[in-house]
Length: 208
Image: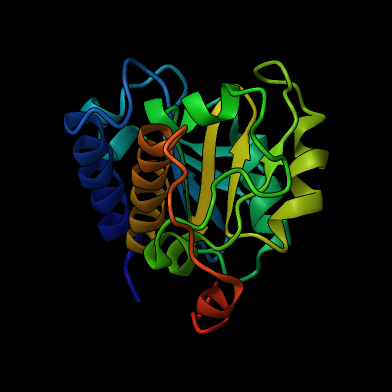
């Protein structure tokens, strides 16, 4: 069992890795990790590339700030996912470029935002629905997320970006990276009639 101190350090390392590789920019994106009595979260208006383990937000199970800097205004989004996914140990939410681009396309299927291009995206993320657009900070987004988070590991927020849960922070990170890579593949192959996995091939996979 990881100590809170260890989890704080991991959040900082993951945040820097995400930032250094251009998967987020400025003060966009947020990370959380579940604790026995609540969760740790990246603070509001903070860059994932410059986090301080000592100032991470610590929230109780109801989302109230216990210690550290004020949390991101999207903390309610994380709480909605944790409420629906008892096995979720961490959540990564980014504004990663290719995923956001897919979420802006008018023909993106809200029931399945990305086509079955590779087995890896399905094994890591499963089917990815798209949540309708809500303005930043709109608390009613939580209700829309709750309606889907219990059935899906990863969600795509329209004109916003991905929200991905995992049993561990590493699992959530890997699935987020796979989602972004698949979004890039989707954009690269649009208009080229790509070969998709068949229903039989998908049935052979172990999906989350």
